[in-house]
Length: 66
Image (cartoon, rainbow, N blue to C red):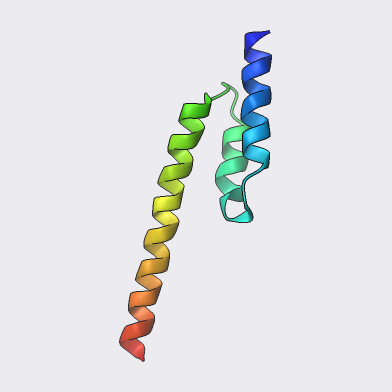
């Protein structure tokens, strides 16, 4: 019963993510072992850092070409 509740909480959280996180959302939801909300949040923060780094590098590249 506890695992069902944890899975439900996790799924509710993940389903509310914006499109940018679709890949990590799918990965987290399809794992055999249900990750905790803390694990999900940590992985989402890492993904956000990665996406931010990509945007910053693109902006730097674009500004050099201008």
